[in-house]
Length: 131
Image (cartoon, rainbow, N blue to C red):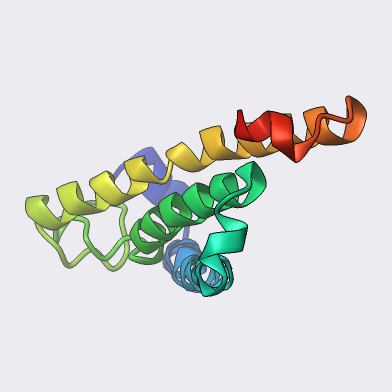
């Protein structure tokens, strides 16, 4: 038995596996709603830098949230210390792809913070962002 298995009960492992199955779909729905609202009036919204950043942020968040929502399910069956593992090496690799694409959200978040900094603190206009 590994050290992790000895320290965590089966109920704790189940709880840790279930949390991403709740938060992942909620994030996926939120990002989908943002994309819907942006695309609903795409001629106006996608002309600005703020909405373009938010659009990219949401696309990659959907990919990452999908991978997160699968939690431990894609892990190879029989993996010690992982509750609910029913997948194989291919499903595990596919989940890894989705989780890694979700890392792009960090960079879009940094762009969003930079946009706020420039527009709020330094009064940079939207016209300058478009250049």
